[in-house]
View 1 (tube, rainbow, N blue to C red):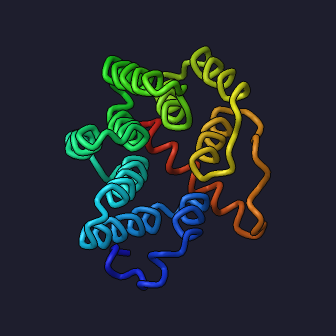
View 2: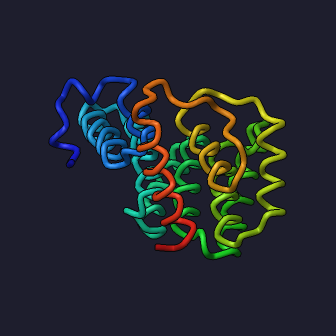
Length: 205
């Protein structure tokens, strides 16, 4: 489904992108913020548009639909605008594209941690996701356990991004932190979609 084929009223439903991500419907989850970014740029609301671009880029990286080189443009744009969280999202997307390249992932995680510290913050779902995907690629249980310790010590938010981290831990063999999504009938389908998405990243498919 292209961004242009989504009904206009759906572009502004706050729950649509989150629901698409939580159920593993990445095509919809990419198309929504892509269309919103285009519309917002046309209105001159560039910072909000860039935030939507970063959301689309992150989801495209998970779906294997972007490259590290393509991420660099948005990284430069968010850096110029001083958008710390959006920059970290863009860096995380690039790291997913390079998840099999240990030195590159380490460098990106170091840069993201430095950005977080500069704002008195700490690594969060972006950095946990990248670290877990890289550790899963390496089958490094020690690294997975270290991220798990950070995860357990942190305050959790009920967001699709935190649920994604939880799905990574489930893929690694841990029990889920979050309860199943309300629509019980589709839970198994969502689980299968996310298993396939994560496996494609981890296995380099």
